[in-house]
Length: 423
Image (cartoon, rainbow, N blue to C red; front, side, top):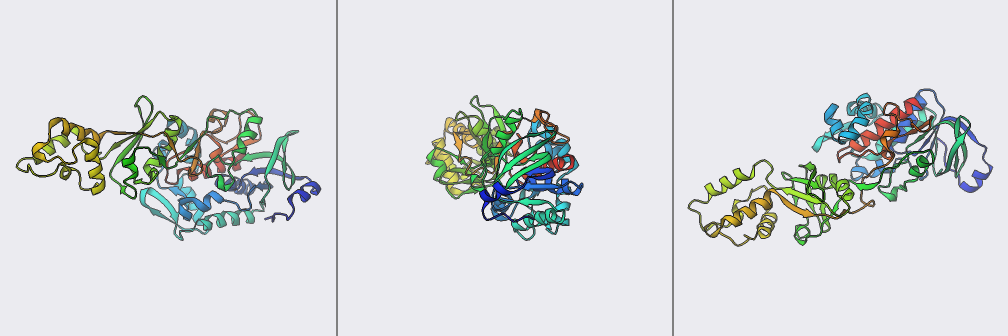
């Protein structure tokens, strides 16, 4: 692998044009996989990364442990991305499912293990092991990795392309764009790939931060800071109250609002609602409202001095039970003076509590970008642009995003692989 020069500008001015079969722009999950697969086909590959280190999003994912993929498969896996995005990803995911990605990474020397929520992590718990394994594969296949080599211009050059970088020009027969989106700008994400795609006639759908904690206004939410609940359902809804996505995964109350897998999965929906949406809680998802009321009525016989709060499910933390009773106006009520209207208010609070949420905490905290290159303009079987032959688009640059749990890395590796196999 080529080491970055000490003086990028001076070397760019004097360096001769490099010629290769495939230029890959972006050394993240999709770009590294594309480079490896193209090189394994005997293609000469130049991999361009503008940062001083490759694989930065891999390195910081999962708290530095790297939730690499999931154990889900088939139609169940595709459904996690939504109907439209799942259809686009079908060929990529079925030709390179999570089991194949696991085999690929383990063959590269990094054993994986399953953890909660169907997640797969390195046994070592070190994300850098994954990056180093991918870099070894690149090195073994003579991929020319150039760091601190930001692409400042990309255009046609006869039947191929020419890329202008801080380290000189690269002429390539094919180009794979794997530049990522706008999430985690501290990793160098600036969305520059969108401009390149637009210059070749592509449509960029509106982009939003996704998989980010939610900023929630009501004070009672922030007062529950530190509480984690598991057996609770939370759903996003639009301005008309239509349910968009339901999640029953861990929820963390924070001093800014809501975090954890379930709320973060809803961030993209919240952002798309542009301040007019919100979330709905079901704190007892396994029991219908009428059944819950019958249970309460049966439990009230002969216990008139008991507080209403005592009827709430014991899996809910005490502070949360008290907050819910306060919201329903029955914090001080006993079963003896509990009115029918008060009981119905508590039922609604438990089963259909709606909380307005204007936004997430934004791209600085988002794990992925929603939106990107319009999927109708990319061949789902090869990742080749339908606008420009020889141009391939993969990873987060596409209008594809999935929930927390390794789904976005899985999509990046699978689409990067297709691009590398056909570029």
